[in-house]
Image 1: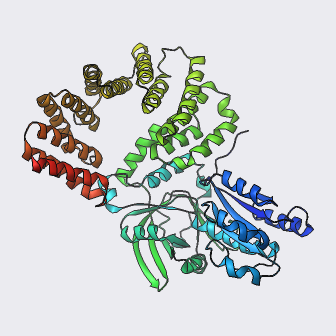
Image 2: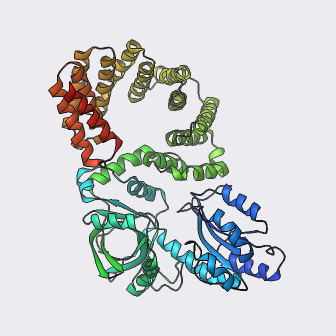
Length: 578
């Protein structure tokens, strides 16, 4: 059966531990009341079984509200309190004075005193409401990053692209009422996120979920109120100015139909809506106001990057696009959730081409996430599926051959890696419509494998082929050419052909200097390599200049105590010593 994709991918549940939980009529009634709050209620009478169940849960995708009787709570609390997915703990006792002395030691335990589970229900409902409200995470892009066109916050771009994959609100549902000028939202913000807000004035902010706001400021204040009493959160009210004439972002008035029906005139924004951060100011000793303006996310540089990635993740099925998007943005916390959804999706499994594409996407994502065994499992399954409906030399399986080779390379099995890279290359060379980009990529991969084996002549053959092909379809100043020049320079350096290495290195640097917004890490690596070549040639002043250039770049985007900066200082010291 096909499984719908939830918008936050996190399941919440109540776990209840009590010796009499399965025998008491009162417990049966309380369980019914709890199920009205959340669908998943698990009960245990044995502490060991309960702890085992908690340990097996996925801490990234589960949220637990834990209820326990005082007779079992004191003995088990030290085991469950450190678990990251245990969000709140409720202890109850017919003699409440017995539990106050030890519950105060643990911040996850509700400070309220409960005589029975029935009395917990209302508090649980409020805590769950607050969590749902504060769960809406925030992503930022600073003004300088917008101006530079760099993607420094992956979650910001991830959620902009993920928004494209969601069901959109139809035009007839969009709010067009001209009288809506301002809405409010109150919530607690972690200290780290709040510091980003203060420093982010002039930049962009995106709420990474469907966003509930209110026309009533007092309601927003009530939601922000609990954060005043938490040491690691800041109480904030977001004041959002709206120009409904010029804004294309979908938002609707849902009135009393929202998740919390006590809200009046709730305004719901689509996931990933972008706001301009206009100001952040303190309104009282314990509360802040964040002034935002609703803006279309059409900043040119961000729009260009979004369009590029949207093209890369395009596929025949929504789930495949989501997996590709996750991989592109490095958001691997969701990977096991996608694997579970894929396993239960009958529609994908009924279409061999779609199945092979999905298996490939999952294998590629697991490879990027560092899970080599899972990656190999999915990629080999993808290859098996492909070979059932296409000839072995057809171009479709070539990316899968390539990625299987990458897995074997990561396992240090160079023989297998070369075998599969050669198969990937052969698929393209024999295809009726060979892809020059793919041939160049696979040639580059084979070259780097031969390099790692110390087979420098073989490496240069493949890399020179890659370079010649790249020149046919890339601009002369494309950063990809710079990378190829760098690799060839490195091999010439290993062969002690220093003049030749310097020539290729200079071509790489010339390209980097022409790139408007070069990748800082690439600039650093290029400068380090140039310094090493200069050092071996005895050009010590040139080496110092290259190392200093690397250091200056690093100091712009790395913390002062970053190990890479220490390494560059070491290179400088060696150059000065010479």
